[in-house]
Amino acid sequence: MNKKNILKFSKRILLILVLGFFVMLLFFSNFENIKNNFLLSIIFSLSYGLPLAFGNGYIAKLLSKLMPWHENPLKGLIFRILTSFIYSAIITVLVNFLLSVSFYGATFSTYTISFKFVMIMMIITSVITFFLYSIGFFREWKKAILREEKLKRNVLELEYASLKNQVNPHFLFNSLNVLTSLVGDNDDAVKYIKKLSDVYRYLLENKDKQTVKLSTELKFAEAYIYLHKIRFGENLKSNINISNKKFTIVPLSLQMLIENAIKHNIISEDKHLHINISNTNDYIVIKNNVQIKNIREKSLNIGLENIKKRYSYLTNKEVVIEKNKNNFVVKLPLLTFGDASYNKS
Image (cartoon, rainbow, N blue to C red):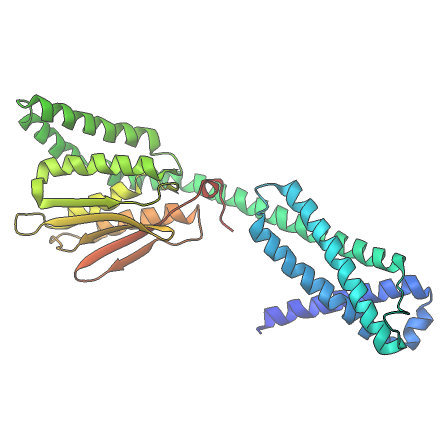
């Protein structure tokens, strides 16, 4: 246990003792009685206080995971107070019975407890629960506001870096060249133009969004890969196999990774580039074989850092990057709709 935890634990014990003496003063109505039974007062205070304080604390943490504060603050508060009320009543009666048996020789048949005492203990713990929940609520609310402000301050920088990777002038130039060569083939030309318009429509509609549906991003990725396949033919291989599309994702993140794979690797008849997109657990996995061109690595890092930074505003899950001599793998966290509302804790 480090110094910070020791200090925190000591403060809790001190608070328990103070509250314990306060409760005993209500019943003894005389400070002299408490002073004469000081050791007994400490034992009684800790016997009630420890299970009440740490038990209610554990319950509060559990309920915070089951009922996050941002989903329904009022419902969460009411449920926490009711839970604390019931738990405190049970613990008070149980501890009181054990102390009565230990110090006063009470039995199950002769045991009695003051209703006033139980109510006081329940009210005290409920008030503390309300106080701590309120502090936690406003702390998380403040964090959410700060995250949003931080996101706004960085939006110009991110947009600039994003657009550099998203709308690559070379990609547009190559696309127009391919389109020129397909003028004589109406079917291919129409399909190519449609895919090209889909790509740029998606770019315009979603470049400023925080998240988009995974299914929508995959359709865009398919259109984007199709345009490159017209250019590279059978030298570019792709496979998209997603079992669950009921998630969201940072927009254009797939496109950035596909573009990086194409931009940084040799694609030829002798060296086919394979791009695989799949999902595992809570991640979408983008994998390509490595056959690096002799170009600078810096531009690749800009795109990856951009993706990692955008994800950092929405979730605690990290973007995972794995690289060896054969494969380059990036795992993007699959988000839920709640993540778009700054569900990061």
